[in-house]
Image (cartoon, rainbow, N blue to C red; front, side, top):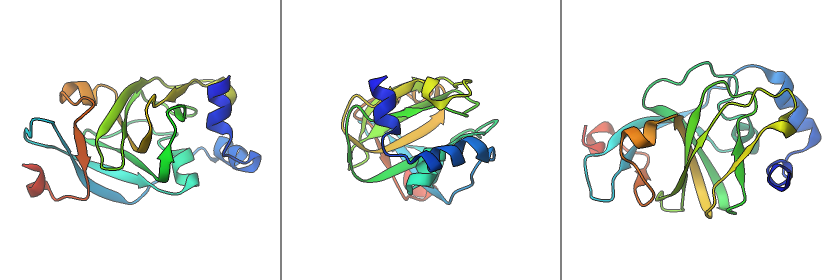
Length: 166
């Protein structure tokens, strides 16, 4: 309950009602980015939608039926977020993995998140970072494991595909 309260604390009741009734996926500007392993191995190019405003971040990947391979969403904040700050899966239809990043784009933690089918957002589980973070990246479930990406690896953006080793 404490985690849900922390997650919802920054949202107005009106904003929460707007989210619950919107029902349409948002489309945001994209940026080319690259996940790079600690050992300097060849990078993994991705295309990320960028969620910068509170409204864009709170809607995130809601209502998506699928997420194309090597695409995701980058959430950026203007100040460091607490380890208790979490993400939820309300109205999110697909399982996702989330990497929490520090100010320099280094992965500090990775979590797996399952869709929440509850009609009441307060019944959805929160997935806290467990570490201080500035950014978060949601990708299809299994992405980070498939590419052997772990805490200590990093995301660089914006980049071109040639800068990513492709």
